[in-house]
Image (cartoon, rainbow, N blue to C red):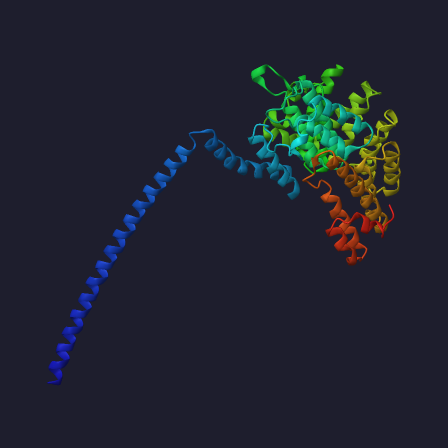
Length: 452
């Protein structure tokens, strides 16, 4: 009985094993079938994805996206070849986005609002003329508002608009004045917008027709340098030098290649190859020869100084700018450039003397007063730094009050960065009790602690 039971158990075990083997075979077959179906679906999905991508390239937006994607890879290759640092890579990416935009202005200028009854009180030409007078008298903030009024004319304005050359003049002066108030970001937009007015190929216009082109290019190079945007600054320097050589009859073997806007009119890789050390030194050497041919020209020396600054060759930049101020001794902006260069090179005493000369010529030059504060801050003389920062924001605030009384609503605090400098200085002085005055923009309250 026991033996028979064992046989039955053995038979049952064999049957169970056979069933298990069959189940395993079925599972394996099902798994293979599922894998085959999955591979088929993946293949179909890939084909569909490729089809979608191909379809997406059937327009300018799609092409731009594809070129941007491919160029990102090339961008890394160029960066590796040039061995540029991280900050330069960030600027490279920004310039590359500008390149894809074919030079179009990415940002429109933001005008201050005006009260309704004041919008059409006078003509654009009258506003422009007043802006010129205000700028000459040192009232820079009010001059900015006057230039804005001349340019920002709405539909229904009974007065005639500015003619093309006058529009270019207004944008140019607006950009220069904004830079003098230490607002390079807004200055760049204004200067670019002024140059854009002469880029209409449909009307046969050329960039070179703009009477303010050379001056605008210098200003843009300086502002881009201040904003740490080296590629853009270098591109405008090259364009300026090519045009300068043509106007002055200076022979240059590379003028044919450099006659068009460098950043927007040639291959991106060429621009940044030129932005390397070798390209800059080559351009500097050609500028030295140009200086020899035009010993009384301060502009070419100013541009050389900017180029030296771009590559942190501050002693060479200072030497070049010293020659420039000898040729143009009553230019406050030039003295300020020399002061900033000396400060960057660690020559704080000489920098302060240059700044002092700048504000002696034009006491309303806000940028110079800000730079004086920065020079004292770098020396660790924080109370003096605070006084000059406070003087800068006070000058701007006084003019803003006058501008508001004329119907202009100053809805943008253009001196916010200087308030930031002042906050940092107060913290360095271990005076947290004054931070609430910074937050409330209480100039009078701060003035009781710092005479300015």
